[in-house]
Length: 282
Image (cartoon, rainbow, N blue to C red; front, top):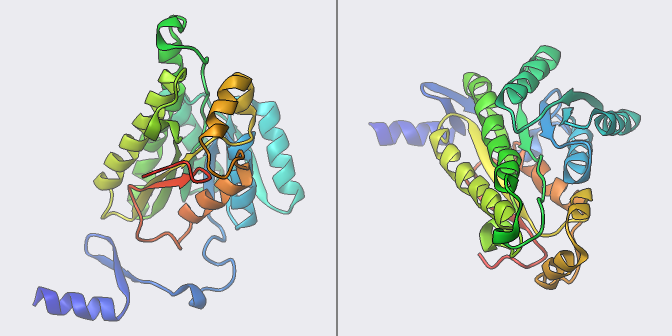
């Protein structure tokens, strides 16, 4: 009987959103242009520059209203102005992702402004100092993990109750190829990004049947302001590991993130998506 019911439901292209509730899926060809994302809302942390800024622009282009969440409100305002100038909708929201109360306040502010959150891109991060582990200054480990790992955890914790209540949502965590392979002279950063990968997989399994998909991306070296935090020698080391022989562009990562925030991503969760110019081997 159960198998027969499942066959009927899938023949009708009905999909479970929450327990006891089914909705009909539309093929991509059936959806009106732009309808899949029109009216949706996304938060992008670290959205004032680099991958975050490119992601905000791409999501706005795709129809999302975008909350540019950043510690640097001047640059966040510039990012918002750029989106508005291109015809998109955006606002700037202050956040210090290393503080859970600040992250919760960010989510509250976005809900008060837009009434919903459909996607969260946990992008805020720092590279930290480039040095062997035994030469790093006291507190550097805590500083990097507080932003790069705890910040992702706080973001997921803050937004998931809302997404679960609605039975839908997308979370994309920005990790790094360093989290898969480990970069010398970047121990806190590599450890934090490895943690983001594990966190993504664990949370994705907790909510896999409840309409919320959680994935992460692992870029190699990308041409962003974060490169100003590391030495030229370290940059050359990272580029030397890339078969394509160049750094990536923020827009290339943003395109991947945008897909992960869309309805077109419907059967991938807890996954790690590379954007590494061929560097990744698994």
